Image 1 (cartoon, rainbow, N blue to C red):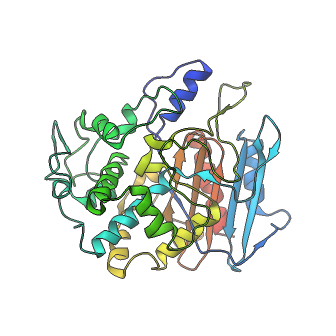
Image 2 (image 1 turned 120 degrees about the vertical axis):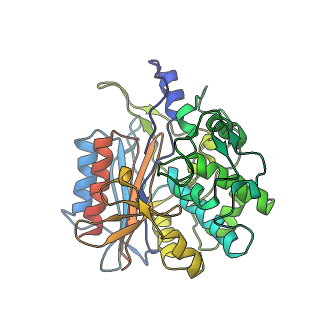
Image 3 (image 1 turned 135 degrees about the horizontal axis):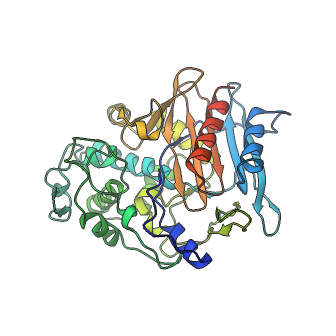
Length: 382
């Protein structure tokens, strides 16, 4: 999900600035760590889908990691990792995973709930007294659960975000002020609307309760705990992607080359979408989560208690930082997904261990995003 940009500038520099102000996206998913990687078979449906995204939809590159019914995990790539040089897309390369970050944040919050340090139905003011207030906004009436489930009504700060350049740093409180300057979309608990602001506040609560930076808590409580070797929360001022990665792009007018947006300060996305990861690590994360490795049963059950979220697709539902979507072959899959300038990720994990994560190296149109989601369905239904 990407809120519309507030203003469009026509120059390449302006396009780069505006691209950074796009929201940290919505729905993707993942599954178990693969035992070993095998080469994809010929005429594989996943490879065909990736090739079509590049050839027909004009995306620079695409990559996928899929765990099938046979328990084997396979990597796929299509297109180029850097059009200017013709470099290949690295198999299972790192990408910015956007709103998949929300699932990581929700896990940390629910771990703190299990430890008795946060109350899921406690008001925000219990942890951040007086902070979340404005016209029609009262932190005494918004609960932690509502922050995580997008039922708080808080306006999405990314709708109002303007960025002077990709290196610009934002403090979380600056971002929160953008949302608090606008009335809520609805009274707390009376509706559902995807809002990055809820996770901004959730991240601030984690820091207040633990006395430690959010990135450190995600690293210790999630990344290190289940051995995600290629996943990290960027440090302050960190613009580069650390390991092998395809470049991310903003697609320009037809006939014009794409604009490289790989290097940027993701502080504007923070708790809503700053994490960098790989397809295999995302599969491992969501499999560990659904498998009970990260949360006690009571908190995992809360996370999987969902409300309808039709904006995310037919039959989609949203829990606490975790979404479900039905599969055309029956059953459903769990995960989240993300969209951030330069990258879009979609994927999921099923109850029986199938997993797929697909990333493309641009944030495309709604129609192309749907084709990426369809490719995930095809991968999980093989």
